[in-house]
Amino acid sequence: MDIKLNAVDYKMWGIMQDRFYSRKITSGSVDKLEQCISDEWDKIDQHLIDSAIKQWRKRLAACVSAQGGHIEHLL
Image 1 (tube, helix red, strand yellow):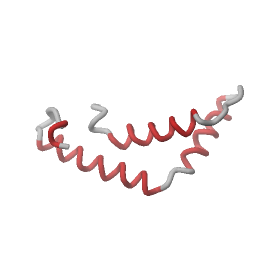
Image 2 (cartoon, one colour):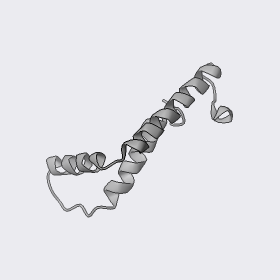
Image 3 (cartoon, rainbow, N blue to C red):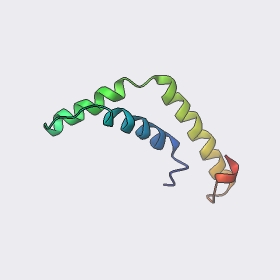
């Protein structure tokens, strides 16, 4: 999927990456890393998630208008 189309995934993982990498991660188990990711996700303001979803709808509509072609000029 084109990264420009999937704004929800792109935006939310960007936020998660910034938050996750700002933490000091000590060596540990995969379970501990999963818990750190889950903790950071729980801290995200719902407004940011809603905003990303609204962008996704706009991008999907642009994709339909472009009949699956490039959408950069429509956004």
